Image (tube, each protein chain N blue to C red):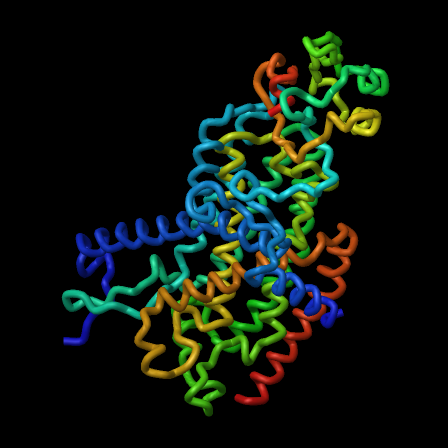
Length: 355
Length: 131
């Protein structure tokens, strides 16, 4: 008997149990990475600026995320009297939820055989996976704009407005770079995109897998840049811009609500790293078709790729200054968008010629 | 442009490698101040008493007016400071008292951890300055 894909119709109890288990594991791993990404970032940036970073809470400051969390948890929760209450309370959640929800479509390993069923190592495989990711990346901005508007402060409002303008400009290019990828894959399902990337490179070299970063290097570069801009990280952290906007959209927030913004920032970073890894770097597949490397479970490779990309983002933050607002807009509309469009056209031509 | 990006990234990466940190873990590791550092004052003792002859040159020269001296005469007929107090809350650590002293009875040490909880703890009396 060939194993069947586990679904709600053929074994409801097992399906729900496994689904809950997967949700729990993915959620806790994501939150753990979020917590320790803050520590890592402070350490990496510290060392790059010839400092040490946190050193005094636990061994090399390892307990710092717990200390930070406790501190923020016990802080006074202030809601400004002039703030619009409901959106003000809603905004932090509206940022964090889309950030976390996107992780659901990231595949983290091959199918497992269990009791005559195939269990996909992915929370859900949507056939519109890439669109889903883009949609939720777009939803995240509502939280920022609402936070900025409802705070009733000019710094927050400017931060929110900047965030929306930046998002619109960069989401276009991000979408177009992804189009180039699925012109090659001819599917929007992330599971199949990963499967396609495990084939031989260009159908000839069996040693190196067919990662889309080799066929689409320009799209990879553009996606990393636009991804950075979309999650508002340096050098594109205009909505926060300490030197001009105090702290941007989260100026008026305190206590756990502020912590939620921070968690969302790092969760977004994980999501962008995971999407980049899945679309361009072969997802959970090993970098070379060697037995020893392919024996290592898929989630290890995925996590390694995510960590490498996150380290790269931190490295960029430690190195480059923030771009000016007009430079940001000019780059988005006059450089990245035409490049992404050209990439789509050229990819289309090549695909048609090769068929 | 890309060359400049790569150069910047390589510089920060080099800084991240071990051995590039310039941080001193202060309370556990302390740097030794230079010999000419102007920290807490010290009254220099001679054989049996302090060198100070209570000439009043240091309270006269002190711009912050933080030194209190009261002179007296001992059994041998020598002039000595019965009271010698420095109010560290007023002291500006200019070192003029050290310069003014004709008998080199006062000097400045490298002690710089001078924070305290009570105002009274900043009154450095003769006994404390002689230590």
